[in-house]
Length: 318
Image (cartoon, rainbow, N blue to C red; front, top):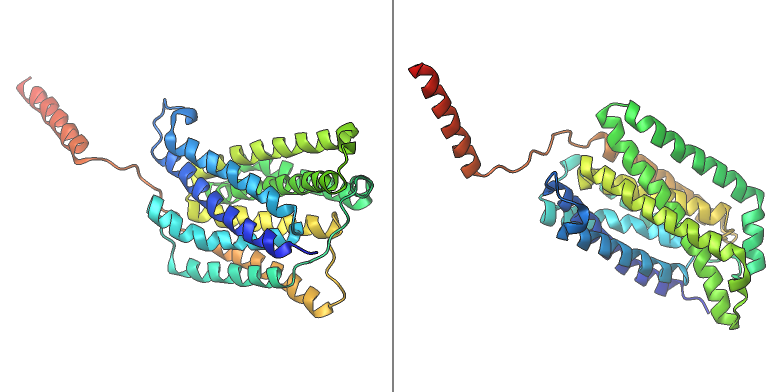
């Protein structure tokens, strides 16, 4: 029996949790004091906790539905983020960006409707074949090269391009977190279904778990790097769109998730991905470059004026 629709419901709940977590992390950077550590910042601790819980919930969704389908649902993040960022951070978007967000959502809707419903069996032999396949090797080399290149050149570009490259790299590594999370859940599901402890003896489960933890930690670090420098209304759409696109292609070309024989469906699915990319480019292009200034209380302003007046008086008397 297929349970993909349950996976979509669980993934939707996870999205809400993670959006709240991301915006709380952004809030911690805005209110951050120079000598204050993350671990003592209640906003950051709350945000990272919600993001972690959301990732765990995602694992449950991945056990019930194909990766490409769950990834397609990620476009819902953009809509939720608009309202959460406005309430928590007071961030607003330009009118044109509401249109670009709608474009991204349109592409997301197409990919959800026509996303693959079938995937390979969960037995260990199939997963081993996947890791040994030419498609995985090519994918691994390609994605590692892309992420590595971005991380190298990010400090050698202007601020505008850097603000785009940072969320791109965090989105790409987040897609690997999803990939290894999906593989891990396939191994666990196989063990539960057949009531076997065979995976405990397999090195594959430990390598997979290590990669999962590494990608999760790295994603959190890079995401916070992006949030510290740019608005959440820019970081989240780029991060999530890259995550969606990379996760979908990994699910289809590496994990062997199948479309079926409907050519029209395949066309609509790939059209949706193309629309997401166009929306992403336009959304980034129209981002407001205004710098967010820290809030200054009237008391602080009055104190500075008093100090200046005293200094001026001393100079006059001299």
